[in-house]
Length: 451
Ligand code: SF4
Ligand code: SF4
Image 1 (cartoon, rainbow, N blue to C red):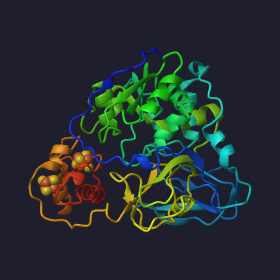
Image 2: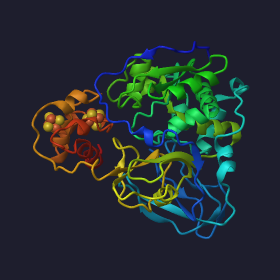
Image 3: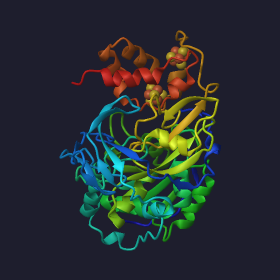
């Protein structure tokens, strides 16, 4: 691993994109607090990209915090671990906010829970020495990552061990840690970088060691100057470069971060590894450090509960599998003006119809907007203004794709590269006719027959 100089220049942004109101003020100053263990958690067997897990426990089995409760032999998959100690109940099916019906293993708490400062210390606090990382075998890092059930915590939930597995055909020179958190309202990554930079840096070095990257950088948007400052002060020996990115949505999209930070373009339909780059989110990096240096699985994650429709916005360390209702209750509930509850951010998240569904590994936030913020006006006809195409960071023509998806013309949808759409929502945000472009594209991707 070569030593890179600390970056100071602000990097140019990718072309297109939008500037939605940030809304981060609600929760940006709220330190991460531990959510008390709920009476019951629901461990979803599919909370990652790839093959679903099968339950490895049966009804009435006693489980301890961190025990495996679901697993799968497929390479692209990740085991699921109990996020509280308790008794497993009969597996049932839950509908997650993204509309997927998945098996879940309920666990009833048995009263012996670790919570509060002790839990935060266990997950994020304490010493994180980076000495000795150079001596760790890359395969050992990959194995620990897989055993810990680690997936991308930025939202995509792609199994991290798959990203970190070396492939001679695609050598990696750069490990990019994504701390942009460009989604409006969300501040979980921001608080993590500000309060716990040490596990983020340790995870970055571990990921770089696993893939053999020489250059290691953490990209942060310039609307988070305190996080940038904290990380720069925490870097010892200059082995990680902290780069300041312009604030623009969707700067946190892998392709946009890479283009802006490195000037390299991921080909359409390609992956960052095709151009020698692996990207991990800051939360993933911290969880990677915990998995490798402490041998602990992914059982908790930081979630922002925020928006003008919530009484006391907070950033919470949450046991995965906790029902959304428990998070909202812990934040003193909804205000009278609450209009829409969104799992994730307002640009890429999903409207929550049921508060009893569980938080999964990919849940970065819960945003409650007021009725006034939620657009009330109905959809009208396309006025052919071209704004959806003007703002698309991937140069796609959203109106054409959405029309093809609506009429189930899959040949046309393919011709307009529907599969390449990253569902960032810029097109829908910009559309004056309020056509639900991204929702139509999302639905089209699910409905399009597989080849
Ligand atoms: S077409 Fe897809 S990638 Fe382009 S702006 Fe719309 S949602 Fe984003
Ligand atoms: S932004 Fe909306 S109204 Fe304008 S061309 Fe696109 S779909 Fe049509």
